[in-house]
Length: 96
Length: 308
Image (cartoon, rainbow over all chains, first blue to last red; front, top):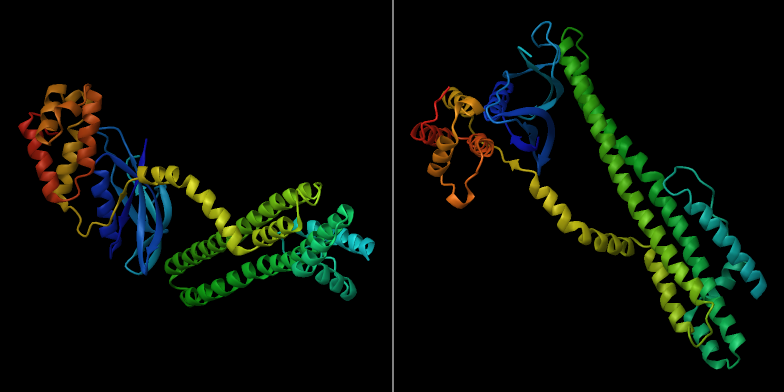
């Protein structure tokens, strides 16, 4: 399966999460994020993996380290830039 | 004088080769030093003008070759000595200095958030950000120093290439390889050990790979930042459109009709259901505004694709 990059600049983790959900609504899966900068502006470069036609996953939820749903194993942990702040977060998917 | 020159030249070459084999390491053997008397001999013999006059004035072939060879070896010895000193100054200090400065700045800016023991989670996130930042700092300097190493490797390779040509040519008589030709080659040997010379070589090689690399970059889609999210309604519609594309839900005729409404030319129409669903899914995937989602939804409805 191929991948593509999505630049995401948001001021709240909730908005970042919704932007990821917008992409995943089109049969793809968030797989990684890197913090990059273009000039002086920090941005997220999220990697999405294309899935087969008609495939939808359980929604991805992002939370700070240690603040995720109790008992759930994170699917991904890394850093995101929200506003001007770099946050360490984990991503969870319920039901998987 | 000629015998002592050859001994000095050989010693210098051995020292330089030993030094070159340690490029990129913090420690390594010191270059073999040149004594002042020997340096004066080398510098005198490396003067192109004086050597050329002697060369032109000499009729004996054996003596002409000696003048030519003496000039070449003297010049190469001085170039090599200067080059190894230059390389050691480039690769020895820069990496440590850059890393130390940036790491200290980053540590100072994050350390303040680690003081309050009550905010454990915030401190942990800050610590992780520090580690991530420090790693990025190491990676950045690692790749920068690797850039310097790549340049130095290019210099070393190019110098060997030119040196091999010179040494081979010195086997020819003074008509086939006159002093002027030897001077030009020695100039090239010097150029090969400079930043400008290395950049020219790197640039030539890079331009050869440019087209293939550009094709690979172009193959990776990058979606620029979109200011607004879809909103709950449009996102739900997009998910519905994706669910509607499961293979057992859609006929090829309906998929083809939807693609026609979306502007796909007949000549480019997919011939199998699987291919048609992939094209429709990509269209849904690329719908990133409420209007685009609504347009797709209309095409699905008009084509008779049941929405799930």
